Image (cartoon, rainbow over all chains, first blue to last red; front, side, top):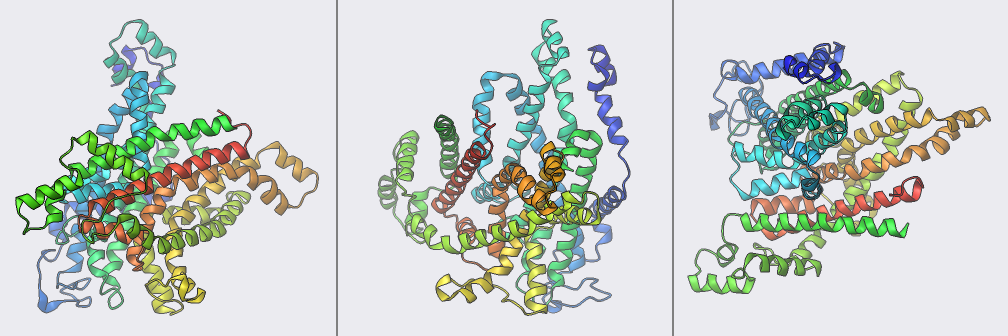
Length: 296
Length: 313
């Protein structure tokens, strides 16, 4: 990639090289270290869930329902006698899959649309009006509506959460492209009759990366939150599947009797979202000093 | 001024059209023929056909769209597939709890977050500032329903100060009404408090650097007067924007809070409608909420033009 930018005569500050080194030079503040460690622990927990979990998270055992913490059931059991610890461990899988999946899908759809909107004036007007309309529908309602139309499998769920996130990304990419397209090196590329595809791909797209990385971490955190909310409201994935939202939703009825049914999933969910948000803030601070000064 | 107003109003029309079209298509793309759903399992094909004609489902799709749009503009949002009552009636019945909840949450938010943001900016880098900033990051990350259960656990169960769940209409007396509204409103305002405290701080930091603040201090004005009269007024515009963009947060917060606290409002209505696949109700709530969002942002744009004479485009 480095050689590409040199071949096309990009000034150094526009090279892709710039933001990767900046990202690597993240100032290791204490909060960043704690956030990274927490997230790493959750990721490891998700990957090695079958090894960590002590029971099958979906195994019903009516005889041992609502048990307290014990050597057999570390966090006790839920109203169906399922092992709470194993369910909470497996819950990390769904949350992280949805978070990463939605961030990727949003990028996959939002980035090209943003490039097109920023570069082609004629398409811009129509596309952005459409995005404005989409943006006016509160994300959770759009997601609920899309899920309600179809059966709530993992794919549909991710698509339902992705759709309301797209306008933000499109706007961000578009604004970057609008700013960059006036630069001399783009004008030079146009004059040298570089194909439009190349201009978009090699000259304009790399300049959107820095703010995109930051935005994608926020999308990831928001997606995890939305998935948990949908599950909690009972309109997400089937309640047999152990997700943190489902665990909390199941625990609602017995909450006054046994708060831990909601507590552990809530803590892990919050920690997960918090650490992703903190990493996003750290990336933003490293990549964009101006933005940092503005937002504090 | 009037020209600007009209231009902004006209710009909202295509957005609303796109919205209406998406929401309309949503219903049409939904699996299952509405006529079959209404007729029930025992209906003969003739009965289904007559219902289809009655609903206008045999018309071409664009005709259906215009008829539907016409009805919407006249305030006719159709009939619920489940309860067979008018959607508009269902919505107005559920309006009071939701509006009370939202208004109480906004009052809490402004009372808590604006002073916090001002103090944080005034003492930038101090422990107060650090505390406000860390609490606001946590406020963003802890889901509303988790906060709801923490609040219930602490204030209703452990301390026993307030009722756990439920809603009483204002007709039952203010005490009953308010005591059941405090915890949900506090829960709902949590995200908003984080957002607005952060924004107030950022906006105040910008303004406090200005020359007129130095002038105000130089002429011997008290710090409180400088902060609240000179600085906060000028920092107000970005704060207004956030209230507008935060509307989406408010909506999702309302849906969740009503679910946690068993409040029979619009949020509960849409969840019930989704679980029952009652599409006309879903459509109406989404369209009205989105319309409200466009309207609020329009009002905010206009208030810019009024509060800040430099903005006229």
